[in-house]
Amino acid sequence: MNKCQKNKSQRFDLAVQIAASKGQRWTDMREAVFSYILDQDKPVTAYQLIDKISQRKNKDIKPASIYRALDALSCLGLIVKLESLNAFMACTHPDSHHEHVFLICRQCGAADELTDHAVSKKLKETASNQGFKIERQILELQGACHDCQT
Image 1 (cartoon, rainbow, N blue to C red):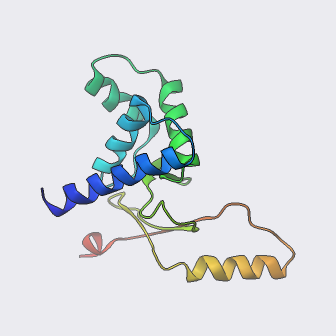
Image 2 (image 1 turned 180 degrees about the vertical axis):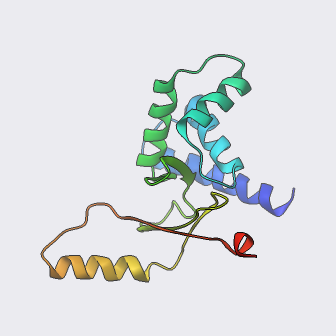
Image 3 (image 1 turned 45 degrees about the horizontal axis):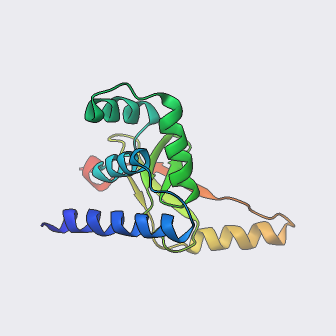
């Protein structure tokens, strides 16, 4: 098993544990959606999921089934929606509460989640000083990744 496969396996096992700890069922559809998202190196749209999972299961999957699975996985903190792309990716550390900060390459579409949340903390403090309570924060920074710059 290579490093990527081990990481995927560990992330998958953690996802199942998180769902169980929150009293959520780990359905076949949630498993299929999460597994496909983990396999991707770029954010995935719901329509891409519908197409790919329909192919994998060799039957037509209804959009509502995909959206239910996406909602459940998102509520569990396992995936995050990138609002500007209307696409989803796996959270890099779903077992800890944190705000999301993403670097999105406008050229190749790759996205990476930052693990240093100093910016999010500063924004929360500044908002609080203004009397504003942030309920949800997803910060998306768009530009060019290292590979696309060269």
